[in-house]
Figure 1 (cartoon, rainbow, N blue to C red):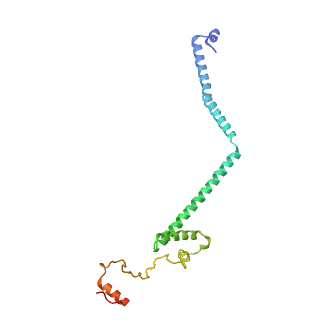
Figure 2 (tube, rainbow, N blue to C red):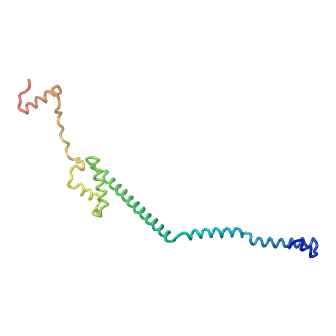
Figure 3 (cartoon, rainbow, N blue to C red):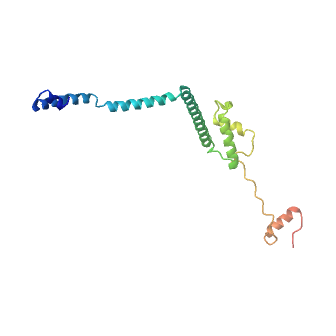
Length: 183
């Protein structure tokens, strides 16, 4: 409704202003009802776009990807558990062998490897470390130092020259051999 239309009806300016004011309130009230129309329209467009993206996904591909990731996770868990078990075994062996006195470090390292290997084997289930260690070194020589074994005798240096030899040593040696003393 325009002002000219209302003037053509013979209405006064005051009445036209009141009608337009009231009409403006109705228009604003109706506009308020549809104020979020643009927002809703944009939300609908976004949702449609997301739905189209989901339509592109194939459930078989997603299931395959989930299965691959699950298998990978299981493999990583198994590898981690195996590594942890190996570390625990090595720590047990190291603690067990710490008090033992081996003839050399090569022997100690070899026995440690064999002991760790035996601990992980089925044949050692239910056996103690002492039993397994005893089985490994049974009938083996030169593995551990024997602290009760007497030290080998020391031999006098046979490369001494005549000037370094003591006369008593020479005389005693000649006597043992049945030779006459030197003059």
